Image (cartoon, rainbow, N blue to C red; front, side, top):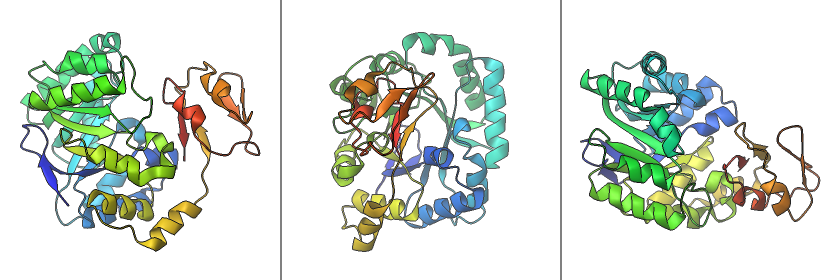
Amino acid sequence: MERRELGRTGIWVSRLAFGTLPFKLHEMPISDGAELLVAAAEMGINFFDLAEIYGSYPHMQKALKHMELPPIIAAKSMAKDASSMITSINTALREIGVPRLDIFKLHNVDSVEDLNSRLPAWEELVKAKSKGLIRAIGVSTHSCRVLEEIISWPELDVVLVVFNRGFKGVVEGTMAEMLDGIKAAHSAGKGVYIMKALGGGLLYANAREALEFAFSVEEADSVAVGMHSLQEVIYNVAVCKGEAVPPSVETSLKQRKRRWHVRPFCRGCGACISACRYGALRMGEKTPVVDEEKCILCGYCGFECPAMAIKIL
């Protein structure tokens, strides 16, 4: 698999990165998750995107014992202050079982106001890097304004941003503006990798086209895709390498049962309910509730969600 340097970090990563959010969403057992991570490494993936809230650190610790070569591990934290960030860094080091982290990011910074409020946590990342605990530091965001703000930060090494084929997952800007920001970050020497290439599962019906669209962004060093099955890994690796997907894998994925899912950060705005042409959604106490008999899993509700809180799993 092709590998590229992540900006000017000296860290070389596979063009396809393994996103571990599905481990949390599917409550993946540690042994099963570790086995999948090892299989992905054997297929050429050396870049693994973890996060404290994903609960995927223990899976990686177990996987490391069976990987022939040390992978590139990215961790991230929702910490907002210095003390919380120190705890998050120590937690990652302990639960992954490594003396140093390759990449550590502020997680899910989606407004400039939020960015400014988390500067104490960022300063702790800068200190941790100077101490040799982290090789590269960065920020993950869905916001064009946040990306514009951080590109000029001299300490910033890496950005993880949302970008995909037609999905409205960008906040504080447009998809076109996000692409401009990706190009600007790349020109500034920052490592860039993309998330939500499949729109949180909403682009599943045309997965190959969605993935190829993401891989076509030359200014992005890698594309992180959430995976939770061997068939998904095989499929994504094949597309990344420009190869045909084995028919048995294609059939298996098409036959897999899918389900509608709303994540905890849903704002309860009701945009998804208005978008549902089948009357399958109603507002519950705080978040929408799905009528599984009416829902056809088309994903149109998710395309209208301003918080990207809806997923098709």
